[in-house]
Image 1 (tube, rainbow, N blue to C red):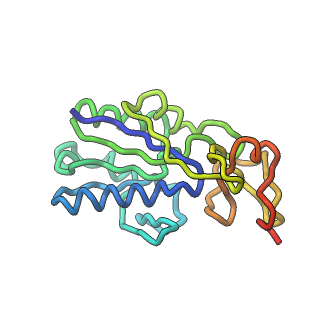
Image 2: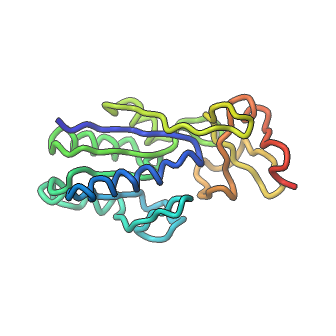
Amino acid sequence: MAKLYFRYGVMGSSKTANALMVRYNYEERGQEALLVKPSVDQRDGARFVASRAGLSSPCIYFSDLTAMPLEQIKAYACVIVDEAQFLTAEEVAWLTDLVDGGNVPVICYGLRADFKGDLFPGSAALLAWADIVEEIKTICWCGRKATCNARFDEQGRVLKEGAQVVLGANDRYIGLCRKHWKEGNLGEGSFS
């Protein structure tokens, strides 16, 4: 029986690297996994996913997936969605139909909350509807578990206002523990 998985973590927790490794594991066993991302994510280029660890792979956009006939999707051992926080609730509902009606496993990777601590629409829907929710853990600079995403400016100031979606990586975001996120403390030496 297929399931919908939501594997979430803060910025820098290796979500994309995990997604790419899962895809590799399927393919190493002779099974094809379909890698998908929302088209809003253009950081690594069109129809391409790359991790900070240097792993990368071509992918399709979520809109490409929804345009595919079900029989074509069912030929894949699973569907892996990176940056799932950018999905809409309707798109997550479509994934539940793919799992329940098409018996296709779907593994989603993404952020749970934004830099203000608010849930992304896709993440809220995944938290509500996923069969299995798993945290991908990483640590704050202090050694505690990082649970919050901090957006910062060029001077190293933690921002708490602005648009929910501003694409970036280590140049704009860092995972922090709740205490240091509340304090806006990026740690000594972060911006010298």
